[in-house]
Length: 84
Image (cartoon, rainbow, N blue to C red; front, side, top):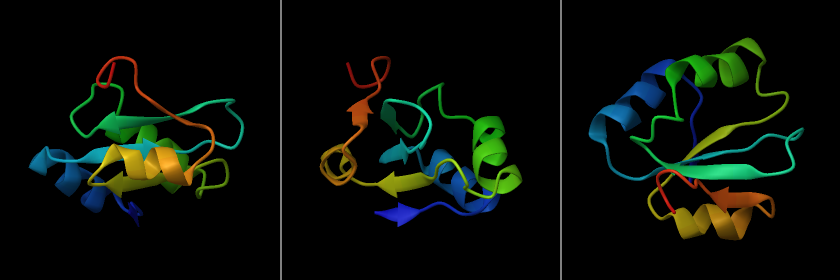
């Protein structure tokens, strides 16, 4: 598991198209893990949460196996669109 800290790193992960992105949010009751190519995972949302907000409310992580995110974060659930 590695935290995604830059738009460049985020774009690299999306371009490879392999793996999963776990998005944490301290305010939301549920967090989600997505396939990297899921339409719900956008650079716009990444930029707002990580770059503009300085990771205050949440973070983005790359994982090779989505079970890793489910095990690590108690509020984490699979995306209902890409991991039904």
